[in-house]
Image (cartoon, rainbow, N blue to C red; front, side, top):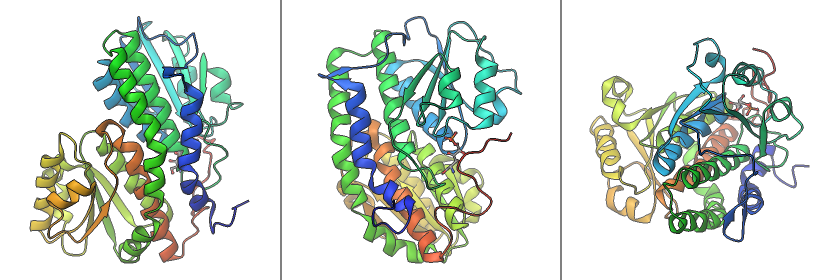
Length: 361
Ligand code: M6R
């Protein structure tokens, strides 16, 4: 069932261009959004998103989208925190529960907590028969296909795609996104599978980098804007399967503490598509270089040309509209974690102490 791949994770990373295209085809028809009738953001004044782990990081990316595309306030919670902190909910809140398995105990409990306290509950799930799908008002499948590897890969990119479509729908319903701009976003989304295919093809570059990353004790990941949750995801993926200590930070936060960790033994992965914040991220990157940190710059060709001088390693990704960069940059983050785990000889698909679906609180 690994279709010739050494691990399920490798297979699932490689499948992303195809499953993403399938998911997009399902939700976009004739240049229009094809979402369930009952889904309506018109009277909504707040989106509340709840999830665990990688699914939570997808929500953190989507927060930027809801705010930027739809001008809609958005809270993101870790499911295990949500119902214990008396979250402020109202009949104008729309609550979204994101889960690959649809069985994560904390996410399910959070859904039950929100059920009578919000206008609408919506599940974004990979398993359409799951408890979370069944119990929520509406369920949107992400159509990633069965994900076996404990490290979530294709579910993450498909979750992001569906959440991006939700943000577009919110923008339309609220009258803040024009038909023209919607069409532009949909066209950009349609190009994504091809870009992901290119990223999947960077496996050898990332395998070469991974040989050196495998020797590190600590690795930092940096990003700004919607690339900040991607930095968190890069770190989560690496620690989960290679057991190397890794942390993600908002690049601007580095000088408020974590830069004390940086020395010549610490690789620092900087996820920097050439967006509006690129120059600021680069200046944070230079702060790392001034402390001898080993910078891995992930950017597009022009970004690498502009800022790549003197960095330890570069990974060149295709150019992508900034809004969609988190979906593309997920792939090199996954490949780096994967090849580092392979270099270390850890159990990639079934890392120690972890379960695919966490059904206890
Ligand atoms: O099935 P879920 O999406 O609800 O699972 C949530 C997390 O347990 C999951 O994403 C976990 O963080 C992954 N192992 C990360 O790769």
